[in-house]
Image 1 (cartoon, rainbow, N blue to C red):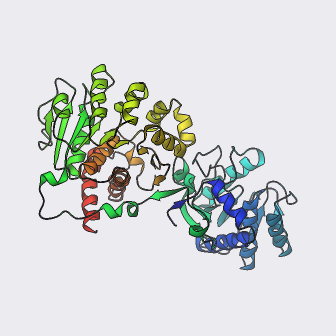
Image 2: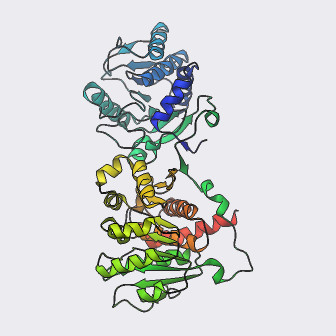
Image 3: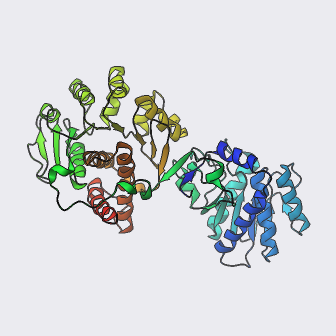
Length: 495
């Protein structure tokens, strides 16, 4: 269950169902254990911020246990030491005070801290912190930087929405986050990775697999590993599919070339490229293995899968070719301008919804907003719901790109990708992803598995390049294609 993701309402129901268990004691014990590991110098005091709810109770338990180990602990409760708390948190506060601990309302000015613990809000906050709470968050961030000490967030950095990953102003800039019971999707998408630091899980000895089903999952190689396998020696190019890329209008041919090259490098047996630009070359001098055709010739070729959209443009000619692609019996990947054309044409949307052959959509947030008739801000405010809605509306799997790409199936299942880095924020990266999806479809991967594998491989290739010193700044789409080939072959050989 270490890849399981739980939305806040699910965790609240689970906490209610397990109310008879000593969850707060278990949580505080886990915090104290991690705090011992994080703090290198026991003689430097620990600053603990305790909030007005059960997250504050967890902090009080941890503070009491750290004091019992001989640590100097300063607890600060911004709401005041007598502020009403939930019953368990109130008991935890009383036990802390009975053990000889003290509570301040303000952070001391002159102390140097060896560890700061954020126990303000956890997963409960759905608004921007304000007043004294906001000042405490700002102070925690400043002090952690000043003293170069770890900042440990309990369950979720205060100010970060645990479900959507949206960060308010201010939000705790944690170096470590310790989740209780289950992992939260907001830590892995949107702003979450920039604020959560190293994420660990304390399950609190709850049998989650027997108690509650996860809302979603983290996407890792294990998710699609059953489809990885070495190539048979007795095979030929026809064994690995003939695929086509339709796009490349004037001044945008590069996008289509990138998709086609990615498909070729990921093992498609034949790759055809149909360019709308009337002045397009007849051969790719950098990749002469690609077979260039006119768009009408491409659509009548003997293909196993087709991608439409990279550099397609939004002309009437582009719309006509998209309509033909939607009416074809081929597995289809739609990206870029194919999505923009869809967003403004109900007839094309109907063609997509009614397709018998599988389709995959890979929008970025602005394209997703057009498909939903909303705004990029609304999409980013709830990336999971946005991806689910698009998948449901068009009856096909969707990858909503961005930090922590969200993949959703029409049936409502969803995953958040764990690979990738800021090096992917450059031109052409989406075109490469389209080509990776296309290659796997051409090699008879199930559509959803193809999308999951392509998304994860795309990010993993960028991670491998950065690990070797190539990026993140200046990383190029062409580099990712080559490293994706290397990784895919190594993954396949291992299975």
